[in-house]
Length: 239
Ligand SMILES: [Fe+2]
Image (spheres, helix red, strand yellow):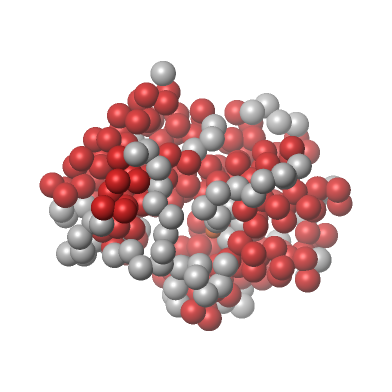
């Protein structure tokens, strides 16, 4: 059994959010391979990409079990993941070079931040960008997947000017932890503003992730301008 499966075994997989994160981790690992190959990275770096993909959300299991939320205000799951991996020397269970351990920590620490840290090493920056894309691709996939029923949530909340203006300004509004469900959805629509690699845009467009998400919404009238704006933005970026 691999380290990830062994570690996650002690968490309650009958909790939908925990089970979701387990499968999300494997799907993100697969996305990392797709991105790494699109960049023609050597085999050694594909292994590194897989390791980062599988472990990027390792902090989520403790976070959800302790706090019953995926919001990072009380516990930053990227920082926690790095700490936990360091303390357990977990990377020794993976087929990666010791010199690359810091790259793994850097990418995991940076995968969930609003912006990537300054002054990273070239490899640290590359793999941070890769994991951010790989993660977002799976979030969009899952939101558009009718088999994952609980994940799209709407409410009667008003979308504030702060969130709305940022969106139409082609950027994500920084979370203040107080967004309503509709605002969360707008911020999810805004994920495409923070994509780095061409292959990721190709996947979003070809798999029609945004259309699939939009089709699942009850209040399509409210979200139509957001859907149309982000679809147009992606088309522009691909030109
Ligand atoms: Fe995460």
